[in-house]
Length: 487
Image: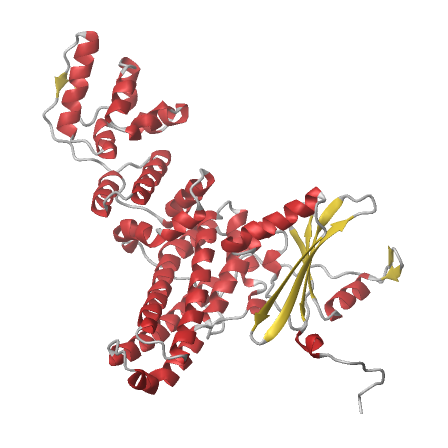
């Protein structure tokens, strides 16, 4: 047998099983070869050239060491080919995923980005958006915290940027949900550039009086830019739920967390401009703008291409249905997109058959009218943690759309508040608690939010009811009012 960069790992280990211990002693990265699955997949296509790159070992040295190990254990002297073999990018899907995960793990450990870029280029070279999404999903499933992936998300993109840049950005037809998202991105970029122009005029001056002259323009631009929240809300409530049905949730969780960072930074920027907090405000605004530019890149080079590849016309109709309830940022959908799959509207309740309730009888129409006329936002999560219902009142406090129905409630909240939601449900299910209450101030309104454990007559847990109410006017009441004040 001749050893060369083209020698397959599976062939080599089949003849010399003891080399497994030798490989692991050379690099902990080779422990993956101990897995039965990896031996049946990766090892069958990986060459010594590939393995040397993964372990960061010079190929010539690696071949000589393997030959020496075989001679020491068996007495056989193998010929080492002097042929220099260029590493051919790996095409096996399983091995590509393992290599990608390994690159990201090393990145999080602090390995130099240049080294990792070189490893990526030599072993994979090309990559598509779906591979990145699956990699992030797998890392989260294997225990890497979503917060850690989010923390270095920009660096991940930097490693793969060259390969991603070679791919075409999606070109959906006018009216398609992605077309609308991308139109919004162009407006966001334009607004961000206008803000940058104002900052360049200021040249980071610490002089409050000079800054004051541009304060009004900056506040107006930041306020207009804050409309991007509608763009993010549609992603979170319309696009992400459909991707989750295809098993893709990791990237959505990471993006949602970044959305929340952008929202918070937007608030800081507005406050700092209003209060003339110079020079602090320059860093805040620059960070905000860069975060938005980076998110646009991730959307158009990773999220949107992946979605175009995975989702069917039926899926896109689901994304499109309910978008108006979330709202659009600066633009409206154009006309032109005609899906091959026609959406069927929810079946209307037929007839006026009354339902027997614990006290009285109501038709389905009456129940719906009653719930939508209450001065409250209601949401019901069933015993399987799935959103089963929300009341579509005229002015909802918190946005909801049809895309949330059937979605696990854990996916309907920002990652930073997920632990609170989970604790409430766990305590309700265990019978330890029945009510949880919160109150917040939002846009000048005082909002009271309560969660109630829903149990049947036998005390069995059947779900969770969320009730949100604007109590601003109620808090102002004093004394009594016993007569009608319509006059």
